[in-house]
Amino acid sequence: MTTADNNGPKPAANPPAFLVGSRPSFLEVVASHSSFEEGHVEEEEEEQPEIESFSPKADPLLGSTIRLERFAKWLMAATLVSIFSIAWIAWSIYEMRDFALRQAKSVSDSIEVSRYAILAANRRAEATEKTIDLAAETSRSQLRAYVSVLGISTQNAFEKNMASSLNYKNVGQTPALGLRTLTDAVIISSSGSDVKPPRTYPTSYGGDNEPMSPLGGGIAASDAVNKTFKEAELEEFRAGNKTYVIWGVIYYADVFGRNHYTRFCRYFRNGEASHWNLCQTGNDSN
Image 1 (tube, rainbow, N blue to C red):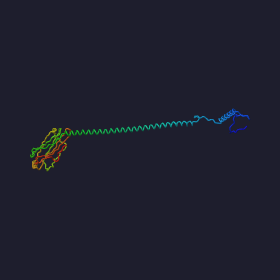
Image 2: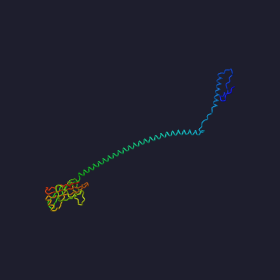
Image 3: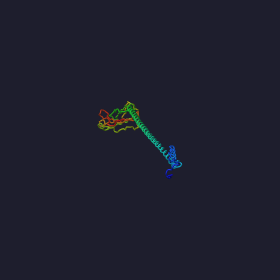
Image 4: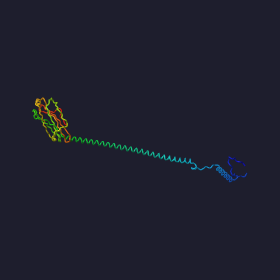
């Protein structure tokens, strides 16, 4: 009987027994083979070490790693959700900003349109006001009083007490109010037509004389101009060496409250067919 090596496979517990010189039957061979396989399987099962079952409580470090892995997965999912939320918020803010810009532009356009409308309305109002002022001025110009000098007449030109009359008329359609007449006369040396009044009256009245009654439209009036001259001056005037000059101003106001003046200057020389001429200056009005 042979002895097996300690490191080699062990023989079966019940090896098949055959009689020498005899032939085993088919059933005996199958049964022997089955017994051999069962014994071999049991030996392999005995030789394989038992695998211990895993339990997280048995290894705390491994359990923490698993929990950290699960937390990392949850954190990644939460991060993705946060990224999507932030992207949506950013898109919403952009849309709101774009909408706000459109609204601001619309409001700005509306304000600009309103400003142009206001400017246009102001221009129309100014044009209307100017038209009204022009119409009022035209009406005042047509209706106001105009006092004009008709001329000067002299009754005794060669006498010592030379008497003359200033004739004037309101050619306007409304009365001349507060009318005042200031006149003066002088005999001066002059030649040709270069005759000027000795002094010029101002364009506004500053005296204290009593005003005349209102002079209605289309009404004429006259004021006497009395001046006593020396005999020597009269002799020079009669000889044609000197000129007789009458000048002055008429102050009045119209019914619209505006003040006016009419200045006049006339001269007369002996031998000129008793014709009164206009001075070179001193004849103007407003």
